[in-house]
Amino acid sequence: MGRIHGAFITVPLYTLVILLLGAYMAAAVLAVHVVVVPLVFKYSKIFQRSLIFGNFVQWPLRIDHEDPSSSGIDGARNLRVEFQSKIDHCAIKLGVWHILPQTVHDRLSEAFERTDKEELHRMLDDELVNSKTPIVLYCHGNSNSRGAAHRIKMYKFLKKMEFHIIAFDYRGYGDSTNVYPSELGVVEDALMVYEWLLNALSRGRVPPPVYVWGHSLGTGITSHLLGNLDVLSRRLLGRPPLPLPQALVLEAPFNNLADEVKHHPAARVSLVNWLPYFDLTFVAPFRVAPQHTFRSDEYLSRVKTLPVLILHARDDTIVPFEVGVQLYDDVLKSRSSGGAPVVMHAFDESQSLGHKYICDADNLEEVFRNFTALIH
Ligand SMILES: *[C@@H]1O[C@H](CO)[C@@H](O)[C@H](O)[C@H]1NC(C)=O
Image (cartoon, rainbow, N blue to C red; front, top):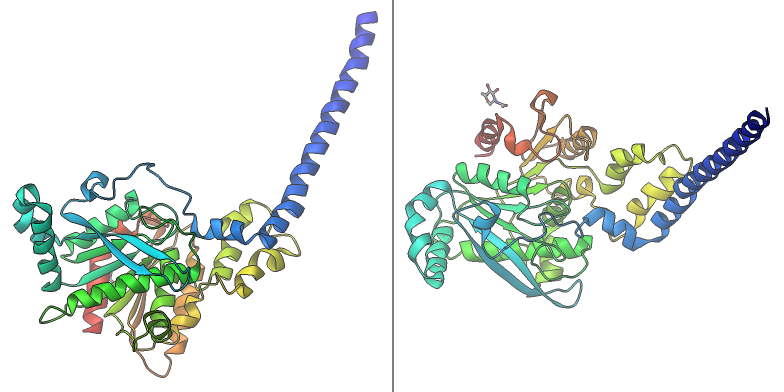
């Protein structure tokens, strides 16, 4: 009897403790979600910046950027573009890969084995400058470097398409100068690589077409670059506007960063978007903060002569399909009275491409060729 009595007493006590603990923890979790996260988010520019650029994420940990083949892409060399930043007021060095088109690589494969490095660089400079096939300037998305696995897959696709590929890392990424990235900072980086490329190509007799290609956050960077090229050329290069490229390809783009944050699945999962002040706290900073707004919709509406191809998978869970459609609609509207073609291609869920693997789409080559046929 006594033991039963004891147990009877003990159980409710434990239960009470557990219940109290549970309530305490639930309250703590709620407090973190409702109070702490919003406050940190609203007032910490560094936190916002980290989420946007994700440049602290590096996987694999050690990438030898000096040797692209160690990341799985052959027929490529490593270069540097160096300049003085007018945004961060310091010297910047960017790591750049030049990847050869497949047939050029095949033709020169022996040179890669034998030739000394300087001679190889001279040969490849010559191939780039006198290229008869287009050049793709690839501007990657957030986190990791130009050596990330899904990027390598896209280079392989472009290489097979017989394009030269120029892929670089923004400041704060990969082996580039470790300065904290900002919107203007990474746009300056893209501008400098673009200028370097155009300068190199101007030494050839017939400059080949250049396609600028942005993925994810890179779509915000390239839209800012090309939509604002006249202002950026004057302000950061002190020269008349650089010419626009042949076309801009936007892979998994958003219309502007505020809407991307609003629709980001993390907002749903972390249970904060039901808060009455969600918009004010999480989204508003991206509308008003001059540093990071990535308003691609606005920028692209300024350059009606630039052909744009938008690629988006319907099952993208990082940048939802709807914000890609929104961008398409906005750009289309800005050209209602005429302008270069804007094409959007939606990839079906059945292909399971998601945010990073449009490179695996079985019809990507056809989509791209149809687009280029339209603009020539
Ligand atoms: C490419 O264009 C052809 C001819 O207009 C068309 O039949 C085909 O469906 C297009 N392919 C894609 C993937 O859009």
